[in-house]
Image (tube, rainbow, N blue to C red; front, side, top):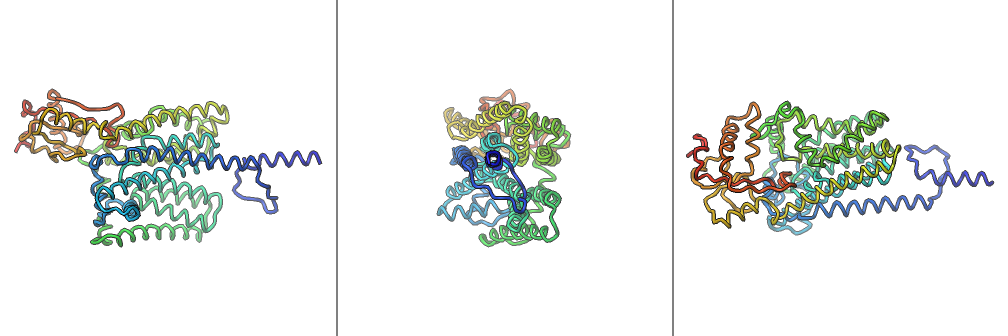
Length: 518
């Protein structure tokens, strides 16, 4: 009896710590233990704390000035009922219209806040899902730490503020990974439909989500050993989700149809192939442009170093297949993004999918490989990564404020100096005369530029439009005519506090190319 009683006690302690995919028929059901309830409660508490941390950053300074993010004006028009151009899928707009209806939006500002709130809530929900997925592979503490790293990183904290598709895509990717994990644990009708819904959600969030959905679909067929009927259920749920979201979008606007959707998709494919006015070719940055200029600032140097070190250790020392899988997803995303010339240094939003996969891999590696050898070391590394990312994330978000933003500092400087004959080359967040092509510089005395770094960089890249080289030469010449420069240590990140220069053109007319003089 004593031995049996001790064995029973041992089983009662160990069973809550074991994660099983199936249960043997006839296995006795164990009663819930105090330890099990405590663990469940701790996970619920962790999710509440994580949601609070994520929301505190996502909603802080959410009402930053309209016009700082140049794409928001068209999104506001779409949300208010103007027909969508479908250069991006309509999930964000559908959600913004619903949020606007719930809040009784009646003007431009109301729809702006509705759209930004959708992005903020999407990032909060993504952070919780990130934690839930990571908990399937990692211990409680490491899962919580790396979920916090994800939630407070500049990548998530900053992009939670913009009325753009990127935050919704991150949420959709996290839903897809959660659905895949559930499907692996149990293949049933509910999980099949949920997985198909998640795949459709990613496609409806952003067109590049289709590539992610395709890969997850193939992984599910192989990893979960799905049959033809089960595969058909996923495909049907996927297709119905896409049709429903596009259908709702078309029904809640006037003047759009299937031809509009096809035209929008075609324009986006061409845009991905040709890039912006400045084209960042793969070999120009040795295939590391996104990594160097976007991924590292999005997570901070210490976090990237810890993540890559932990991942390398887990793969080399333990050959951990889960770490390899998620790290592989991150590097495939990064490689494909590098292939496209559609990248502008300072526009970080393209690498958000990389952040999701890379931090999941890092969390698993710290828990399973480093934690198994020295738990304090793993926790210490997670804390360092969290503190580094949190400091950067909070500082970037704080710099969205009008009083700390570099654009408004430049405008205040001009007002104080009594300067009225000036022109800007990028939206400043408040009304100002703007030049699109620099052809009206001869009629003004000062140029306020946010794009000078873009063209100075473009002058050193091959196969650019001749205009890029002309502008690079102009800004090189204007280097000796800088009146003032406004910048911040935590700036030049996704429209946060960009470096602004004010050039005095009165004695620099010779710097302006003849082709731009009217």
